[in-house]
Length: 167
Image 1 (tube, rainbow, N blue to C red):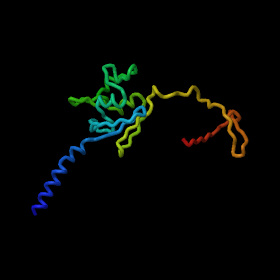
Image 2: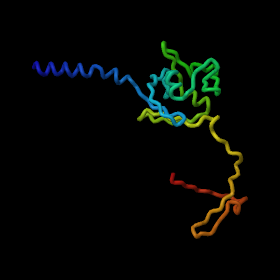
Image 3: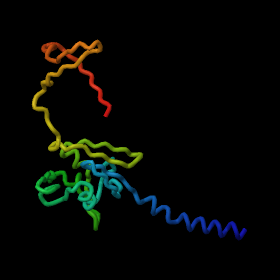
């Protein structure tokens, strides 16, 4: 009996630290193609948002919260005054920032894999390249029999282009 009691006490003493480890949540943020490991907050708003410390915000994105908004070098995005609670949550001594709400504000696509706790942030609207025109450039390609065809040969007709690349 004594052996099982002492081994049970030993097992309980080994398991005691586990709840603290389970609370230590980790997430991966990919921003500007740079990967950063962070410890996100339990979402104070109950949504599937990514709340990170302002220190992690600077480390992962190089953006900082300033009085004029969320800034990186000369680039600054003002936060709407009426919606401050969507972006900032203060729990002394830490200020939390909702990175997903910021992404929505700057029209930045976000992909989230909950199983891997990974967040990918695409190009912001200020980074995206726009087409100068909706007209496709002319090109010539051979068909299956080797006969060349140019896109301009079909001007005024409906054309369905299928492309594929291996990279």
